[in-house]
Length: 409
Image 1: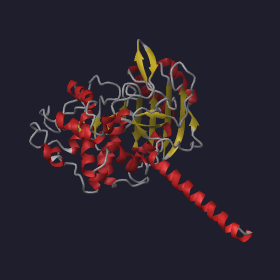
Image 2: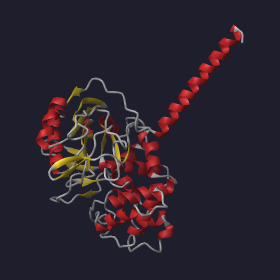
Image 3: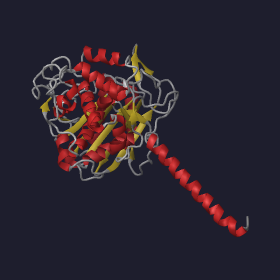
Image 4: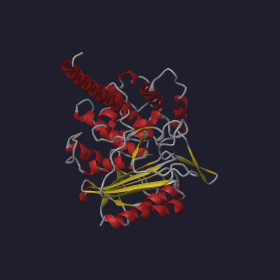
């Protein structure tokens, strides 16, 4: 080949390599949006000195928190280890489990299909699954999407029957994840609802699983696929994924911890490191502290801060209270215990602050995450730890008060 012919040839090869690289990266990004860590935010105050005392005081392996205002990171930090008994420092890009804080994301996904005209807030189980009409128990066919998302459908709070169905779900070997959800709702709704719709608040993970199955039916795709494409990707929650936050065989995230004989036991990724994946719409999401804060920032924007995933009035409906949460209830950490509830969001007051806050907590018993938002002042806090239980809940509540005292006034 002549020198004149060699230059175009080399240029062509270089272009091909670049194109193949772009395609390869694009393909990996589509499959593992989850593992690409976001760039570290510049400028926020480090919270390490504030967070450190909480580790020993409350027996936490790791702890992370971020404060945001006016769409920006104000303060952020993580301390501790990914696994109790080992020195594996955590970072702000590490994935934590957010448990039932997932519910607001499921409600947002449902809202997209309402805006698109494929669902209505008053769409019923009987309407979406007409083939089940003959087997649905009294009142179950009239359960609405709105009732499921606000925990006012009349479906009872999670009970032994729910737990038994979860166990039996592992025996449905020929069904994929979407089909297992459908199988569970078809079995669960053969018994009458426990209360009249909109009359009683009953926190139900099964209710959110049914709502997720309704979305899956009208979309023709799994809840996980839809969350990745329609929520995580546009909001650039690149660390977000499902199930245990670490990779099988690796300690590449703060491991969840069980409290056994008073000691924190780290749980490697596997079947006992999270709730079954079928629970997805009710609470199997994990993400980094930074991405959880980005989720807070987007919600604080109330539709004015892109991307515009739903209409502003639809977004307002998601956070509008529907029902009072019974006061004085001894709720487990991660479960709403006071205030009012909308669609995946609670509304409550705190003795250490003025006004009402949008909030939720999430826990699978081995992790705990709180999100606390003040939309009127465009201020928010997210707090995450890799252990569950009452002491962890006390720690995050105490930390929230301290952070608000420093940054919220």
